[in-house]
Every structure is written in structure tokens, then in C-alpha cells.
Length: 101
Image (cartoon, rainbow, N blue to C red; front, side, top):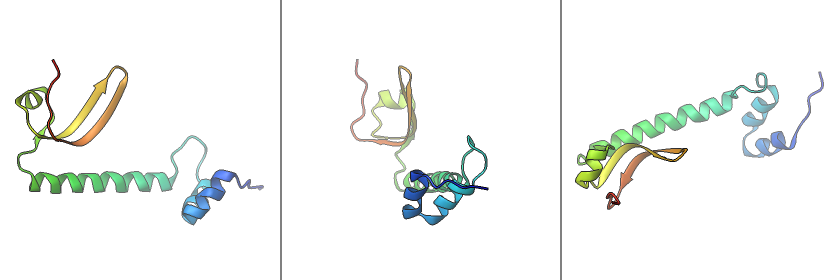
């Protein structure tokens, strides 16, 4: 079995030898590598933990909704922002938030 070491694998090795290993010996193409799954799982866990800590510290943070936006709430959480064909998730919105008429 011939294994080709690509520039992607070489760059990954300098960042993290485990990532390079998983890129070379990972499952078939088109599937998410275990390394990426680990990163995603850690990101989601950290994000959930930080959001809970934020909610405890700022009790005046309300879930994102049009009504809370119109009320002028300064802290909104769990916002799914959409415009045209674009969408972005924002766990925390803060500052002077208001609607443009």
C-alpha cells in the first residue's frame, strides 16, 4: 500500500501530529475525520458552558426574538441572523441594539 504525503498532511503535522495521522489513515474521503469531530465536539461543549456562565452572570439577557429586539433589550442570546441567502448563528448579541425602520 503506497501512502502519499501531501502538503496538507505535512502542514497538519507541524500543527498536530495526530491531525496528520488522522488525515493519512482516516476513513474514506468525504467523511469527517475523527480529529475534526473532536474539535467540533469540544467547540460545542465550550460554547454551551460559556453561554450558561454568561446567563448566570447577566440575568437581563433575553433570548433573541423580534419582540425582545423591539423592546430594546441590550443583551440577546441564541440569535440566528438571516439576510437574503446568508445565515449566521450568534450566541450573544450586545450593545445598543435597535431596529432600523
